[in-house]
Length: 75
Image (tube, rainbow, N blue to C red; front, side):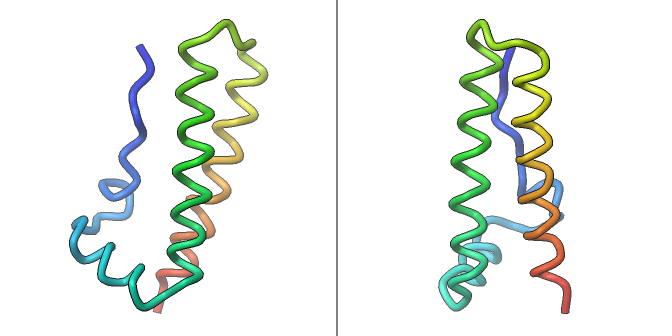
């Protein structure tokens, strides 16, 4: 059963703290929007008749965006 990926848990950051950072950091906000969009695509693919290769490709794209976010958040 497809479930939404919990980015904030992976980042070990609370929602209010993350939201505050996004308000002052347009790049972080943009990356988060991209992440949410690809996460929605992953969920859609997982719940439809998408091939394993398609789902894997989408998951890899999601991971790349997550890595960008992690890198961006590093001081």
